[in-house]
Length: 155
Image 1 (cartoon, helix red, strand yellow):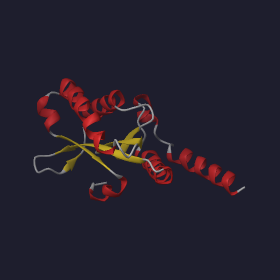
Image 2 (tube, rainbow, N blue to C red; image 1 turned 90 degrees about the vertical axis):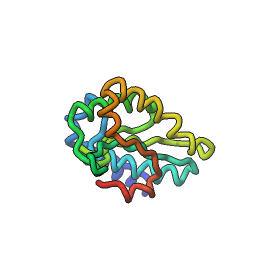
Image 3 (cartoon, one colour; image 1 turned 180 degrees about the horizontal axis):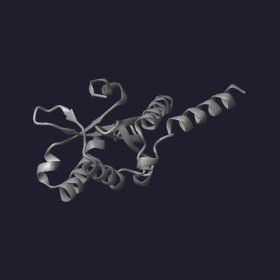
Image 4 (cartoon, rainbow, N blue to C red; image 1 turned 60 degrees about the horizontal axis):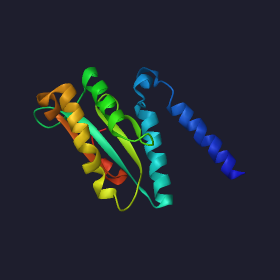
């Protein structure tokens, strides 16, 4: 009985979190609230299952290295590149609305945890360079981390 209530409560929370994401539904990306909810859920699930999940973050930095607002062209390009680079089981959305795009990399085996960035990052960088050019791509930072390492990321 508790399990049914918990499932209904979780479904209700997810439904509430996903309200207002229509502006990015064409790209398949979640808004910040829905993405953070999915990130939390996947982190909890991965702890129970013994598999890791990792978070891939892409953000725009200014000349001083501070995270800045992504213009819409760059944001759409990053979302499209992530959609091409990541698996269907991974989630893509705004970790920080308009500033940091995230990908939740689900069910990463303990053996392959270290290889995640080397598996996704080169193709992602290649796609971004082809679409944005070297100059714009050089201002994008790509970081792969675990949930507990997110505290240092500007939200």
